[in-house]
Image 1 (spheres, helix red, strand yellow):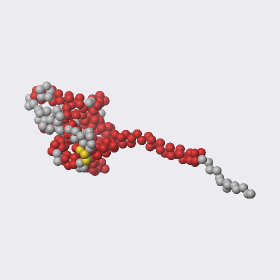
Image 2 (tube, helix red, strand yellow):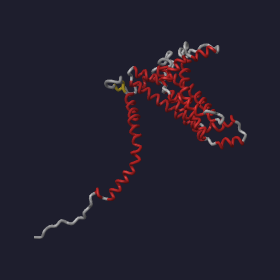
Image 3 (tube, one colour):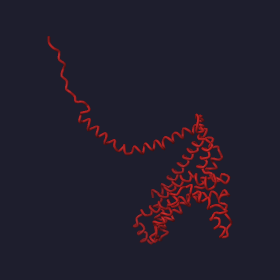
Length: 314
């Protein structure tokens, strides 16, 4: 009887021992290594920005007091916010302070940077550090100090004004003056940092450009307006956006200096209005207002970029 034999088959080495597979695996590991380096950023972004943003939008579509079940209300919180006169009053207050802080801060920062950049200016490093101190001091501490300075009975500012023969200024009791007082605090906090950015940009401008202007007979004022200002457009745009975001998020200053947005809610900014909504456990409306404010700041920022594009292209 003929014995059956199985047909011979070539023996294939296991996949794990294949040199080609090992090389491929090492290549894939090498290709994925850069993604491992940038993974922490995306993890932090997803955990501390993307997820809270999505969850906040989810909360804005519900009525919620922070505990218990959420009640879906759709776009009701947005409609309530847009019909609430306190929301529009806080927007007007914030816009008023923005119109004060933005031009005044830009001009002061630029002038200080020009002085720093002067060859005749001495002790530059010491003065720069002094101007940067407001950026590292606690905002609450600064607000408490300015509240004392503005006081009409014991404040040194009012004592100096009356000593010069001018009438006393009701910084904390008059609505218009209270807004100016908060704007001055914000200016004191931001001018030094803005001047530092302008100073760095002035240092980056080639001296050969100014030398060519000297050959053409241009004076200091002509060189400032025709060379420095146009070449600082990007820095001006950057500081404008930063100051816009800072003014729209003002909270500690009106909370501390003018005693929770007084007088008569004249200094209640959008940030302080959000705080009041959270205090009242109205998290749905607070989330809706925060999204409306974010959209408004995005519109302002995009508008600034579009308007300044012509000067930047030049």
